[in-house]
Image (cartoon, rainbow over all chains, first blue to last red; front, side):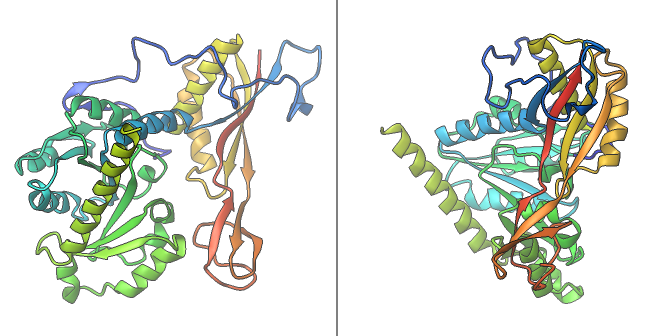
Length: 279
Length: 111
C-alpha cells in the first residue's frame, strides 16, 4: 500500500465501481478477535467517572478485510481447480510479454485466463486478448496495487474454466502489492536484467512474499553488468526458499522450465479438486 | 492510504456493533518489519479521518513492535530491524523472521 498516494477509486474494465454494496458484511456473531473487553489494556489513561469514554479492545488485523476476501477467492479457486499466479514486478520488467508468450505456448494444452491490473488503459488486456485468451482489465485509478476485492469482482466477470490457470498481472510496483494477498497460489516476482541486481535488497518485502523470482530478458545479459549470482544471493538473503528461473520472454530461452512448472502446478490443483469433489 | 481507510472501516464496523459514536484514541500495533511507515500512517489518517464524525477528533497512538528473527545457526532469537539484516551475533543470513510483522488495531478509547 502506498501510504502516501491516494488509493481507492478503482474501476473494473471501464465501469466505475465503488466499495459499497447493496448488502452489508456485518455479522451478529463474533470472530474470536472481535470480542470486546472494557477497561483493560492501556487503560491507564482512562480516568473512571470523568467521561463516558471506555476502552474497547479489538485486536483486529488492519488488512483483515482484504484477507477475508483473499480467503474467499482462494477457496473458490481451489474448489474449481484453478491454479492462480500473482505476477508482481516493477513497471517494464516484461510481465505482459512473458504472459503473451506463455499464453501462446499453453493455450492449446489447457484453459487460461488473465486479470490485468494497471492504473489506466486496457492496452495490456488487449495484448493478451490478441493471443485468444480471455482477459479482463482492472483499472485501479489512483491505486497502486490490486486488492482481493477487485480480484473477486474480476473472477465473477471472467468465465474461468475448471482446472485452468489464472494469471493475475499486478500493477507494476515492487512495494504495495507485497502486502495484499489476492487468494493466489503463488506470488511470482519478475526482475529483468536491465534493472539493478540489488532490487531484492531494496524491496525485500516483495522478494520475501514471492515464492518464485524470474530473471527476465536474459538475452540482454551480454550487454549489461548484471551479476546473476549476486542477484540470486540477495534474493535468498530475504527469502531462503525462493525458486529462481532465468528466461527471456522475447527469445523463449529458458521457457521450458517455466511452462513445466505451470503445468505441474495446474495438475496438482486439478487433482486436489477432483479428490475434494470425489468425497 | 488504503490501510488507513481500512482502519476507519474497522472503526465504523465496531461503532455499529458496539454502539459508540466517537473514537477518542486508537492504538495501532505496527511491527518494525511491516510495510507501514508510522509517519505516513499518521499523515494519511489525518486526511482520511477528518471528514468522518466518528474519527474527526481521533488521536492515533502507534505502538512499535520490534523485529525478531530465529537464527538457524545460533539456534536462538535475535533482534533485527529489517528483512535484510544479518544475525548480530554470527553475521549469518539464515534468519527466519518471528516477530515485527504486525499491523493491528489493538484497542480503542471510545464514547
